[in-house]
Image (cartoon, rainbow, N blue to C red; front, side, top):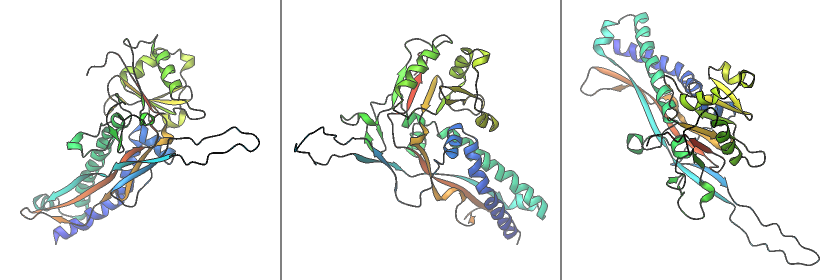
Length: 325
């Protein structure tokens, strides 16, 4: 049957492209590209929540001599943040009429390729957008992106099941600074330096800075030609980059860029992860889906997981004073 031929060809095409789709999503976004390069894209195999262990306390070191007593009372040094499993899908469909109009093996493959490519682009672009989300999109079904994890107002809200407003949870607040006046090429360097230094902790320091067009351009204008160092690896991957104190600085603006206006994120990606489910990491979900009351066949390319964080205190956001609420 014609529909059977279509089903086989579509299934083969989607299965072949699924790994390429997962790879392309990471290539399409500077943060995900960085996480993949550092092996921070880690699949999960199950569970209703995604857990990230947090080490937020210190034990007691006691100075003593002779037979002084040493207190062995245990202290709580570890906790865990839990993140919800979020799901998304892009359907690929064909009607019986389209199938008849595109009969023959070659034409069927051509038709499938176009629709699969569209699903490919759709999921890549929408995931890149979601990386900056605050988690409220689609009635809270969207992943929690940078606006959620590295919030403008880190003293409020619950992230990973931990209420940031609660006394004692200060360790779970990122740094956030709004410039007292609109940043210029003469002032942006100093503001960036203060934010960067506030996030350094021993050898821990930001390794990725992401900005939109405005702040990236302002910083670039502050540099002399001899100061414009870039990361060749990121540049070879297609990202517009500079260097700031050893951190890669990336522009995620222009067409298809989603970094929030007037924001610059200072990220320590040692503590940020993309956690896809192994069975839904840009893969075809289930078998054929025949419409009950339509002459049509569907396939679904699906993803499940979330963006997670295990240390908030080493993440920061610098906000230009001219930003509008």
